[in-house]
Image (cartoon, rainbow, N blue to C red; front, side, top):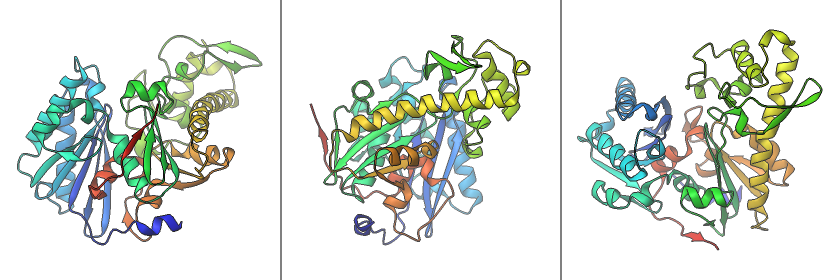
Amino acid sequence: MADQEKNTLTSPLYRAGWDIGGAHLKIAYFIANKLHVQQYACPLWKGIHELQSSMQEALADALSEGVDLLEHSHAVTMTGELVDAFDTRTAGVHAIIDCVQKQLQQSVSVHYFNGKDCVSESDAKEQTEAVASANWLASGHSVAMAIEEALFVDIGSTTTDLLRITASQLHCRGQSDFERMRNAELVYTGVVRSCVNTLSMSIPFAGKEMPLVAEQFAVTADIYRILEKLPAHADYSGSMDGASKDKAGSMRRLARMVASDYEDYEVVVWEQLAEDFASRQRQLILHAVKQQIALSSSCKTLVGAGVGRFLLPSIAAECGLSYVDFITAILPSGTEVSAYADDCAPAVALATLQYSHPALELEA
């Protein structure tokens, strides 16, 4: 892509980028010319101690590779302030910042992404609305600096973010999660943690449309395990029943969604049910993609990120768009990166961004 040629990374930037979610912690940093990216389980809804533990694990893992991250600068973004361990989003932002500062207190510097720039601890605490759930903007800025016209879509474990880029500017109709959900720029569906009964009220099963049990027996990870599409490194969350996360265990849980037992039907029936659920989720995301490209006639490229990006090439093709992965879009060809860097776009963005960002254009 010609547009990508303007994005040059002439030397490694010794900054660690952190993305703190409600279920996972993601970190990206350079060692010499290689971009290392790692994801850790971090069930933050259980309490702030989970973040402390995950950060300590990340720091120890880097040290075992010969890298003392406390000698780096750090840039942090978050979505974990939304978990119900915190009474309010503001309380969540403050608690996360306090935890990060404690873990990284000996570092060169620690800053927090507010949607435009990285700011100090004190400024971040005064700008909680801007700091909260701003990780999608970090990724979007990276894409806008590399490609002039694109739709950026990040399908994660829990949510899907969509952001239009026109003339290297970010365009959206909402900035808060509330506004973005209202405008199909944030779809609360992901390929690991979403309950399958959020995808549809009913599903074709055994020759008839079947209503679903209103219980949290199975999640989307079960669907994609059955279909053998969920990357193993993304499968950190526990199963809903605490039992095995193999294919048979996933089919057993999925069977409960139609008030059945796994043994009641052949394996092929459960595989078809998983396909049908996957199709319903794909339709939710496809509908949001179509809404976004209808607002931008110049958009020809879909840039995909996140652990669920395997859904995006076919969606792009159906919409008449070319498809490119996030890392391919933002980094020069030949850059050595970890195998699943595309799963952790906000962390990668913070590790690589120069802080001279395109403007965010809010539309009516």
